[in-house]
Image 1 (cartoon, rainbow, N blue to C red):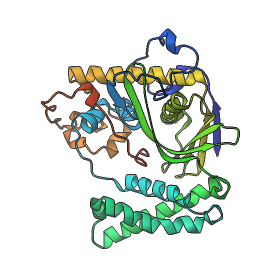
Image 2: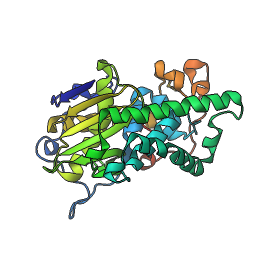
Image 3: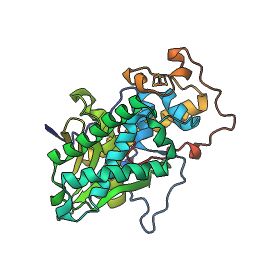
Image 4: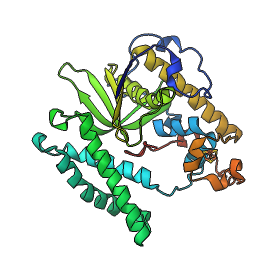
Length: 329
Ligand code: SF4
């Protein structure tokens, strides 16, 4: 199934209701193309903080989760699902290194083994993802079978022999006039002969229910906002490809959408700063707690968070380094 939406020009499509609504945009942002960060002659404002879509999503999901990840920087055990997402992303990226006619399902499946070996070489702890016994072997086989199914699912959604991406795993960043730096990795950018830009993101989960689509699109609008500021053109299409169930979600943003996204991001950052200053990071339990690595230290589950770091985290140090292929869960 494919769902297509068009920019509504309202801020309500941008996501969680818990984030305080931003005030109206300053007059300088209210019309026209935004200042392109990094262009010749432009003076970047002083950077006061950084935010990626993943960490913005963490804060919207649960402020305490954001704290554990960004302020405490508590390491998390890689989950099989997250690692599989990284592997499938790597395969889809490498697929486009092949000559156009060679981008077949068989060729893509052949990339799984070498890419897995490469990831394990880069992060040796991944080798311990499964127990070294019969049960672990069976689990690894099931895990790999699911990765194969996802790669095959990709080919049911588009034909890579008819595509030549302009960019893959593109790192983008821009600094808003407020000093907030937005950054992230875009899975793929396609540019049509007309110059129109399509931003593509692969998801190894399943497509969200209609009432959760806005949340999924927030990440894409975040990227679209950054691209608009960098290139001066609103991307024509945002495309989320759900390999878990073979669905595509498409959305055409407009300028009003992206201004609303900017206001939402600024409001989110304000909420993060307030939590940083007050030290109040509230847990927000949801069904996602079942996958949270920090349950044992979460008050919602009888735990106690560790003391906050004694060295105050400077605002410009509240950063979240995005990692390609880790945005899937
Ligand atoms: S267990 Fe749930 S409420 Fe607690 S930190 Fe994790 S996501 Fe937040």
